[in-house]
Image (cartoon, rainbow, N blue to C red; front, side, top):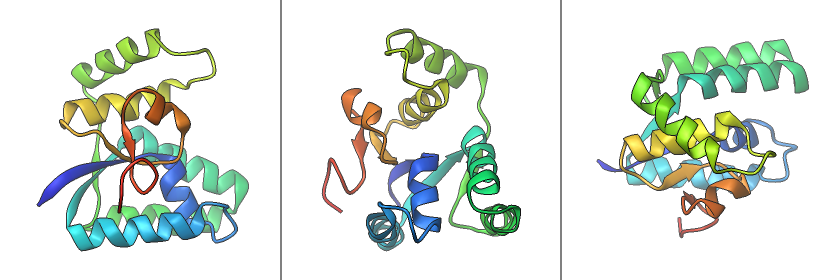
Amino acid sequence: MTNPVIIDSSGLISFISDTDSNHQLAVSISQSIKKEKNSVILPGEIFSEIVNVLGKKVSHNIALQTAHHILNSKDFAIVETNTEIREGALEIFRNQAQSVSFTDCLVMAFADHYHTKTIFGFDEVFRKNKYQRLGLDNAL
């Protein structure tokens, strides 16, 4: 098993939505993750965010299908936030521009907790904070 990858909603939503501008890149990244046998960590809050966004922007049916697929998949480990990760996210949040969401800070705190810099997501804030957006800031 290689370096863990933390999943952000931007990566998974791009993978699911074939009309998303990053869809093809997200598919390539997903194939690379599977090929490399990376452990895939999906923060619980990100799972909720994915279901919410898909429900609003695509359909409840797609959101439900995606949620059940994730819940029944052996490819994802859904991990709930603990106090240590939440405190780390608050520290990261403290030093961010107002435009940066606390949820993105949670993703970065998960990366710190699991001793990785690799995130499957497309938000520029990850690169600005010295994390690597898989497929963008490092090779597949």
